[in-house]
Image (cartoon, rainbow over all chains, first blue to last red):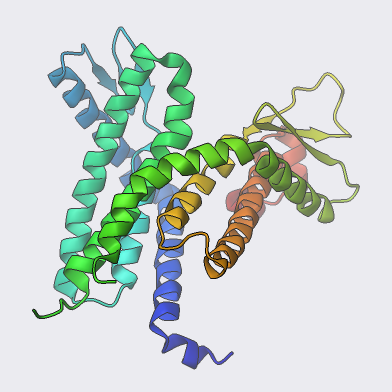
Length: 171
Length: 150
């Protein structure tokens, strides 16, 4: 197959760009200096915001690094739980899609905020699942919420592509 | 087709529940297939062939025939490896006419790619354990570069 012809197919070009951006971003966040300088502080920030929300909800929550604890339950936010991977999948999709740069900017900023809000809801709900239904915590953590967050990121991308990136039909 | 994304997104919550049910039903078979394929892949690059991946209670046990009988057996959660089947099925079922022949063919192809990815994920779990988790043995058999890669 001719690579040049492949590149001129929009679907193939999107897929190639998407995988390139995604692969590159995954490699970058796996580097130890990036992890120390960006990923860990970012995860701590997510933990602090989650602790703040839990205190708003009346929990006696304290935050130590990436751990949010209260007398009732404690959660530690690891690298995979900070929504960074979903955000990178979403950003890769936005950057790879043929759209104006303004639309891409709107997508990246809006999408990141929405994904973070979703992740915050996830962490808070997992905290309460840990309090009230601890036997279901692992299932909720691993396969329910992870799937929901990924599907949310994909849905967000579809909404962005449909309403912001693709040319709208005139009435 | 104008409102296809809207219809797709409205279907998604229901298809997510359906996908969870299907995944729970198929989980043992998927875990068996992924572990079997991963074991073949690991063993095809090792001499002597000592790795055995045994699925038990939704975890895969990394057994080596050259380890002592009383050694601790490391495990990997298969739920973390195969849960993304739910995402594939939820997205697929939300598409128009999911049970038509062309769509089922696409599902088959997509699922094959996903199982291959899950298998590679499990292989990396095993190799990461071998490269980093076995102390001096790891340092002797894996270079610095290999340990960093894994």
